[in-house]
Image (cartoon, rainbow, N blue to C red; front, top):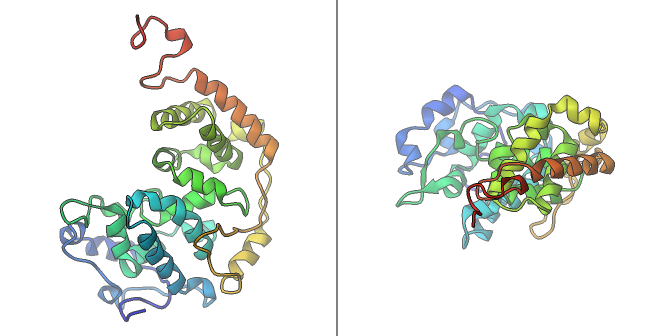
Length: 295
C-alpha cells in the first residue's frame, strides 16, 4: 500500500465531503486522495480488525481487475456480498454517511470513477451522490445495504441475484417492503420465475409495494427475530475468519434464515398480483382487443 492509502477506515464529515466534490472532481480532471483530507478525518470507534483498510482496498482492486473487460455494472453482483463480508457493520453503523464518504473519497475514489465514469475520458461521474449521498445511491453503501437486505441469513446467493439486476437495485431497494425479509426473498423468487425483464421487475415491485405496508406483510408472513448475539460474534471475528474468497461466496453472519413458509406465501401472492399488473408492452388477459395485440 502506498502512503496515499490510509491504514484504518475512518469517517469523513458530510460538510467536508461536499466541499471536496468540485466540478473538476466530477468531470474526472482530478482524483482526490487520503492526503487531501489529513486532519479532517475521524478515527474508528474501536481498534479491532474490521477497520483495517487493506482488505477492502484489495477487494476493490480485484473487482476492477476481474471486470476490466466488461461493463463496470457487472461488478455489482460479485462485489456486494464480498464487501458486506469484509466490512462488518451493524445497521446503525452502516447508516452513518461519514463512513461511506471516507471509502469513496479517501480510500477508493478511483473505484468510484471507474464504476460510474462516463464521457470521453470515462472518468466523469454524473452525480456527486455517488461519492457522498443517499444510502441507496452512494457507490459503496448501496452495495452493502443490498447485501444486508437481500441475504438469507449467512447465505449470500440471493444477493448475487438481486445485484445482478439494476432494476431491483434502483427501484426495490428504497421501498419499505424490502425491510421485511420474507418480502425481499419473495421478490427474488418471483424474479426467478415470471418476472424476467426490467419492465417486469418495475411492475412487480409497484403492485407488491402498493398492496400493503410492512405491517401487512408481517401479519401475512411473519419473520423471525434475527440472532443479535450471532451477528455480534461475526463482527468481532473479523481478522480471525478466513479472508474473502474471490471465486466462491463467503458466508455471512449466522443470525437466522428467512422462514421458508413466509417467503413462499408472499411469493404466491406476488405472482397473483403480477398477473394483473400493467407491464408496458404486455397484453393482459383482460386487454384483448385493446392497444398492442389487436388483429
